[in-house]
Image 1 (cartoon, helix red, strand yellow):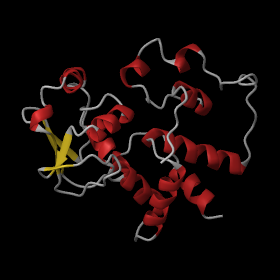
Image 2 (cartoon, rainbow, N blue to C red; image 1 turned 180 degrees about the horizontal axis):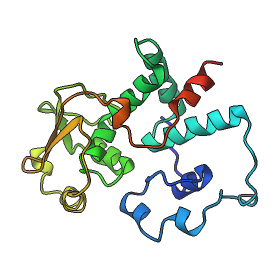
Image 3 (cartoon, rainbow, N blue to C red; image 1 turned 120 degrees about the horizontal axis):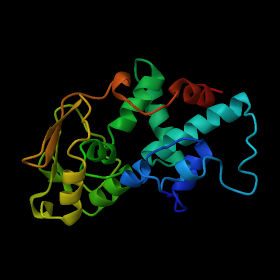
Length: 208
């Protein structure tokens, strides 16, 4: 899958808000939004009024950036959500929240979703006792996500556990710091999603 490799702070500046893509840096004065709260590029300070389509497109791009998902995979998730009973936008967010990299981030074992992806691909985690190195793996209710025994002494893991110990864990997850694990109590509901996304705009965009 194609991965965005440019400076991640440019994404936040393009969207005009913090997307917390750089972990702890986003909470400091080094954050680009704090220093330069305008779009990147020569004409970045000349914000134009968006059309209806432009607004919908930006909402989709912002959501993709939040979760670190490419266009092809994002559309696949939308099609999955559309095929299920219920509100398509809510189900789409539920699927995105169910990604393993997001779960690792939510549990505080990754400082950002990007770092969580890196740790997963490097074999730091297991699900229900089996090693999983696919960040897009979708967890289910009852799954146990755990740091593998041979990775518990990892410097990055230890730092994240210490730094993120006070970070609130969503109600749909249950964290056990002693065993460096977390249980998926249930799948996330719309009320559990704390990111500023207007999912109905994405549904409108794809429904055209």
